[in-house]
Length: 164
Figure 1 (cartoon, rainbow, N blue to C red):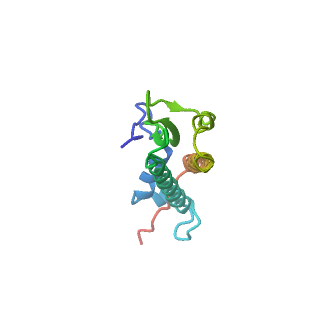
Figure 2 (cartoon, rainbow, N blue to C red; figure 1 turned 45 degrees about the vertical axis):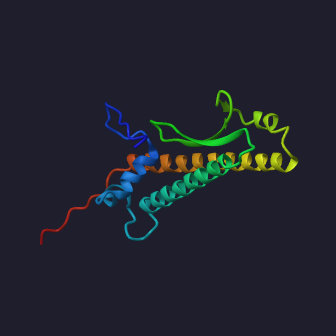
Figure 3 (cartoon, helix red, strand yellow; figure 1 turned 60 degrees about the horizontal axis):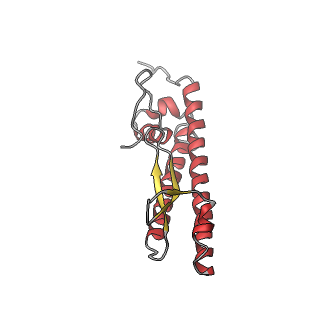
């Protein structure tokens, strides 16, 4: 899986989303992560919420990218990129014909100037939506990073069981 690279020195997952998924799926995560167990208000609940939000955002990104690929007269389309180490996912315009190069957001207006007004408006709206999704993904990743830093700063809450 992309983003599953681990640092050699600390053996720590670099990708915050991958760390969150692994933490949520661990059986013993409440000892480390959730001080307010069974209340639905602790870090585990926040992690589950943000992982679900990121999955929803990525699904919307994939759908938007697919829609742009299905327009035959459009010389550009959105493509979904993912950074290997960090797992950062984002949408970006790409040329369909010629060199298939990445296209800057500002160039879209120039490349669509020969299209109908309706198609230009649609491309502008798709660009705005793609930028909104990119921002939403970054915000969710930042929240996961903050939760992770908070968890790693906090000593584990392990209470000794009574043997009687």
